[in-house]
Image (cartoon, rainbow, N blue to C red; front, side):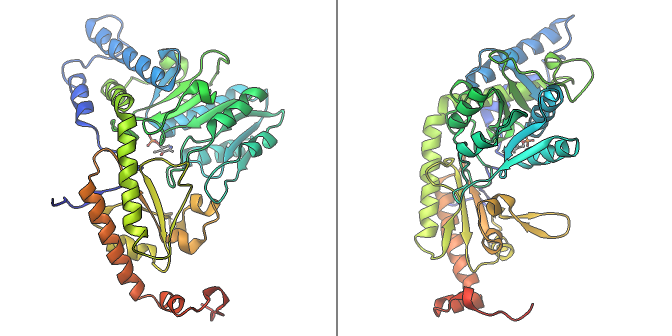
Length: 407
Ligand SMILES: *Cc1c(COP(=O)(O)O)cnc(C)c1O
């Protein structure tokens, strides 16, 4: 069977909207367009009912006890900002110390950086070579000034799943709030706020086959009741935690996306994992010096992150431009920086630059996986043929011992 190009293999960046989600959303653009905050007429009531049903569905999916625990936001970036800044502002008199990790999403890291400028102290827990956090390191970092620990459920680059249950046991014992950015894991692996003791959870619809521009911060309402200072003023929507007219079609789509994940997660994760492993073997069994980044055991089913030694990342991306993937380099203003996540795991700059993240998801087919594996093997072979370093490696020269001329 022929495949359509370009092939989408970047499901960790975003996912297409599931047709069932789109269908559910449509009436809320046209007939049911009321403002959920309009209390005086049926248009408003209809919108409000849809929003309340969505809250219940989403909170229940997380293992929460009430729809009131769901604060809708524009996405997970905003939810991460609200969690960290909202907690920091509210609990500042209790303490000024926040703990997070070196491999969080920029929405956490940049927010933490801002809080540091405002006088908060931030501790960054490192990860090991596998991209995993040691819960003991978190225990050791907690002081009587610590107000919040923020650790992601699963990483967006390497797909590693953090030991949140163990971390949550520690934060609960110490009486410190736990926030988790659960965006990448939700709908792919089981997650539950009770088992993990998470007090705040950031989620986003567009990473789970819902629309872009809608997300939520789940905020525990009892044992303990988490308090936040709103970061967006005006109108007092969302229990005073986030003002702004609600994106009703987005919220309806988000809830439908959650419902589908709830029903299909088990089979879907099996399927994507099988395809992921097929892609991995289709590449690694035919090429030497290809390294898997991140734990294979504690890993999201659809994530594959590989480093191709002796291949230049840019050239590789060009060579497989018919496949939509992400590279281990982040384009910053002027230069090409190697991924901070791979760096934090101890991957060298060269290998980080030659890394590619493949994201497999709901609509990936076996034909696509076969096509991509074959293409990657062919292109890497070709690029290596042109590499003097690869030639030296083949001749058995220890590249680390070579004295390089100044460059
Ligand atoms: C995509 C992503 C975000 C940002 O979510 P948006 O809804 O796009 O703002 C935050 N954290 C992680 C781990 C993500 O993968």
